[in-house]
Length: 437
Image (cartoon, rainbow, N blue to C red; front, side, top):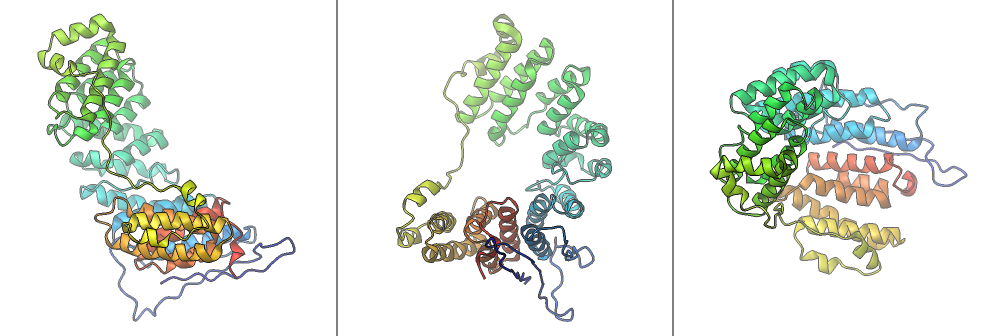
């Protein structure tokens, strides 16, 4: 496990760093474990950065922490991608070249995930750290039947690297659409970049709503997104294109099971058709297609996007109870909620100066994180929980928070937590880095 040692000198104005160093303790090469799949190879491991005389102590702390976090192995490529994405974003203001190095590895992992049919959890392509010259090759290597998995990357490519990526992405998305593979968000981004009034955009708009997913039941969750895309483009394209696309969309919506998402999509679509075609044109369009009319008759019912039940954690409530020991109450909560509630209470107690109670809360929070990570298959977003808890602890005492993240059981969780601490310090939201001596 990589450990970071931090040395501080107190200056006359208070608690400020005069120097920071980072050191890694590793087993000997003879006993070192083989690199995990998805981890950087020994040759690709970033070099430990040399201290820069021009960096103040906090920035040097961030640089060392991020380098050490990235050096940890991740057995899961999605986790490796998350680590690299966060690392690039945090380190970019300090070492732009290092951020680009992280991005290169991340983009390679994105490519591998897409080719396996997995949608990357995050994308570095729209992060601003990429080499635009590499985008044509990246896009060319996306399989046609996997374009939907690459939607984040494609949208990022055509918006961040328009000159290099526009034409390759246009060819890829159009060819995929002709073969029945719709990448709706990249297609909308391309239409906006090319120009919504161009003949190509008008044609693609109509084709898009002729190529909606065949299995309407499984695509119900996407219905409001498709409706928003229709509303975005309907008034911009010519009336015949808006009419044709609108009718096809209504027919498709008519195949969905009743529910809040279907109602919401119908309300958006019918409203956008009326705005684009006028009341008379709208009625004429429905008169020409019985199935579209039947679907449109359901418009007007209350609609909403269905969300999975979410955990509600209130920092304000925690601040109101900052002097009360809530640990017995928190013990009965599910691990993810217990971790987040304990972190909120730890932040509240620490902000009030009760470091003893804050320490007890953070002991509970980080212990729960290990349970969260072990059960991450059933936890909605375990990495986000690790980040939230680590950031709360860093607001109170970044050194203590860093040490806690390093003691997490899984290297991926360690790296995610360490970078979260570095993010707080780099943003200037933490207390003095030398709070712990």
